[in-house]
Length: 120
Image (cartoon, rainbow, N blue to C red; front, side, top):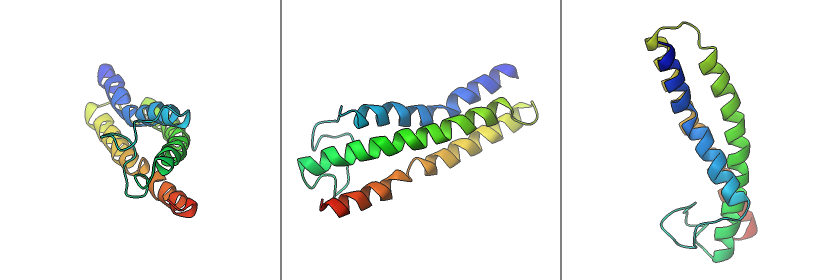
């Protein structure tokens, strides 16, 4: 059962660590090519090369903040998960992943609002 707790911890950390890695990359200016097949692709971010860069830097910074905010409590919950059976650990891990999926989208409307303010 102990191996399952570590496996679920690793799975729960995929989303926040991805947010941190991509967020740091974009925040520091390592942005995918304009109009490419990956990146923060919305109508506003694709409006111009300047909007593309702005959106990635802004979104990247928010993803670093949100990623850190999710990483710490997710780790604590999985390490201190009440009960030791695999069903309970799996339930907690699944619930955390579900919540993280929605939390990782929070920066999108903020970025779109910032793009709108800059005229993009």
